[in-house]
Length: 510
Image (cartoon, rainbow, N blue to C red; front, top):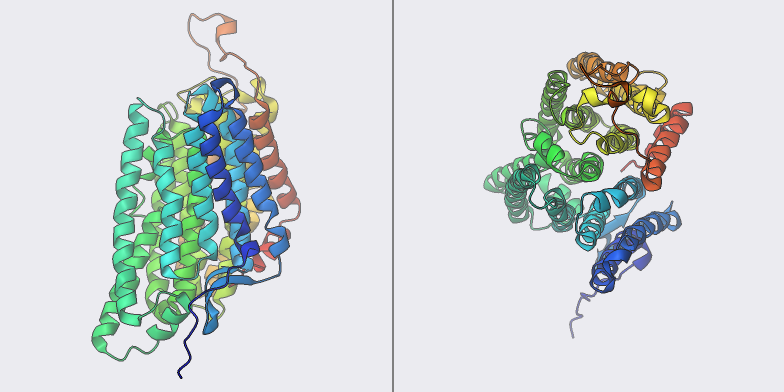
């Protein structure tokens, strides 16, 4: 009598706990919104924030465990979900970024009259998908996690009903993302047809020895299309066109969320498919990503330099173009992984840079949210004299900008850039290192220009009384102040001991 292979997979609920709890809290918020009176709906924001904090704490029992679940019964080493060090570090970044976004959002939801229940449900749902993605180890789970992270973000961007900019931003974001998903799904279907598997480990093994040249051609097309799909998600040029308008039209906390958590999702997916799924195609994706990195950082920084400081929303536009430039830097170590025999070291550099970028960029968006309370147009010129009005906020913003520029006292930014630069040189990509150095110098111009604006005196308005020269001073909401303080403290601590970031990220080696 022949034996029957069991099809039931084991489930490790502890490994799944962080994204599962986040999704469960999202459902609780959605249901509670139906029963809470309008006066008590702000409690939903605090419930969502607490849920994100507790989900982040659930990462602690997983440290050093390398737990895995949804494994094939006959092959316990082939799994769909792996809570390895790489996954845990990215999940920490995602949940930490979502937590800071939640703190920024508590007063934004109230001040802008956004639908409370829908907002928090969508934010938590997106965070759950983002936390699921870095632990995904098959192409189907990767795509599903990516879409769970992306679909709620479309609605969050367009949640300001009746706002033309918001509707336009959501439409552009939706169309570009749907196109990226369609291209990616086509690539995944080609890979499945060529290799007969969706698990990254099996795909990598099958790609090394395809028996039929026609299958090899199909697999090459699948690899290329999958990489193009992730290039959209990471806002790599020339697939970056949706970024500025989307950031301007979205509520400021959501713009910050997309710039940090959205990028973490795209880059972690790109790392997994290249390093774990397509290592035999490193001679293809390595040069392609190197060219994308050079193009992305150049387009982002040149466009940021050209921003008119008097234009409405110029501060957010500059941060948007800056994030495109930063995406170029993040691509450099992934490209270097295609040229080196130790891709894990290069990936650690990307993770280290992402951790630095997440803390200081969300901090910059937090200060932008503070300025927008009195200057809704959020021009760069609106930051003139900020030190005289709010010295601590101006010092924090100056620190964040210097970190992004890589200048003291933002030592962590300098350390992260040197780490990425050295990885490119070690991989033999001297030309890419030179382009990166040129772009760092270009970026210094607009970061320092904005920093100097903070400490200048306010412009005099002809015919206005002295009391009318300054925007009205309003109190800083406690959640917003907490978010700025947390980002500042984290940046200062990391600048005091920058080696901690690399040591922490070294645990993220695949």
